[in-house]
Amino acid sequence: MRKLGFKQYRFNWEEGTDFLVILGGVFLQALAMRLFLIPANLASGGVAGLAQIINHYTNFPIGVMVIIGNIPLFILGWRYLGGFRFGLRTIFAVVLFSIFVDGLMWILPSNGLTSDLLLNALYGGVISGIGYGLVYRAKGTSGGSDILGRILNHWRGISISQSYLLTDAGVMLLAGLSFSWENALYAIVSLYISGLAAEATLEGSNVVRTVMIITDQPDSIRLRIINELERGVTVMPAVGGYSGAMKSMLYCVLSRSEVSQIKALVRETDPAAFVVIGQAYEAIGEGFKRLE
Image (cartoon, rainbow, N blue to C red; front, side, top):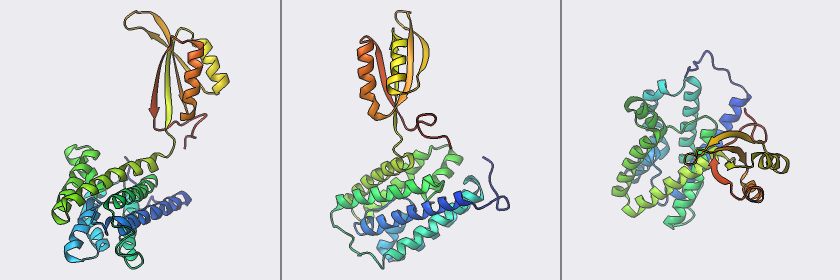
């Protein structure tokens, strides 16, 4: 990856939009911390979770500790972060998150909205996950585990997901010793939900279905898909592994709502057809999302 230096960096409207999205994302993360995770003693993982644990014993501001904890990680990870643009977004996200976390303390109720651990874990996970997803969509990072995960991946070949598991597992262990093991277990639930919410926010609602149809009547099914569903179809030759017979395989991509229609269409045209329906995260091109 070619890194963008300071001299080559040019701010534009797209950059401005990304920074606004990052601002909204880190605000949601801070809101989830102050309303649900911190009052319930649910560690959020990464540097922020470690700051929560230290704050529990010292009352030192969490936001300030997040900035301090990210400085050595940022120095180590600068060369792996994609240059000036990526580094700038990371600094922007970390500093704003720290300001919001400490600033919201004076506005929001110190006891949060509820004392129920499950509700705090659920809502804290969902809201913070949406925040993380927005930051990732804007091509940014929230620092902490993100940076450390990339460093471990580069130095030791450890996958990003395993890196997150290692770093967050260490924080959860400390949380169990500091708060309670019940709180640590709920914090793990919150982390899992946060990951799901972040993925859903990052990927959007563009999940589509892929359909493979092996049939002796490819032309009839192909024409019905084109005319009735108005979807494109790719026709490929196929050979039966057991029989050695030549068949045709149709491949097409549909929305979720069209799955029942294509099953009915195939059943009416060739009841003996073999149909496989899969899932794809995103479809880009004619009939779906534009390639940008």
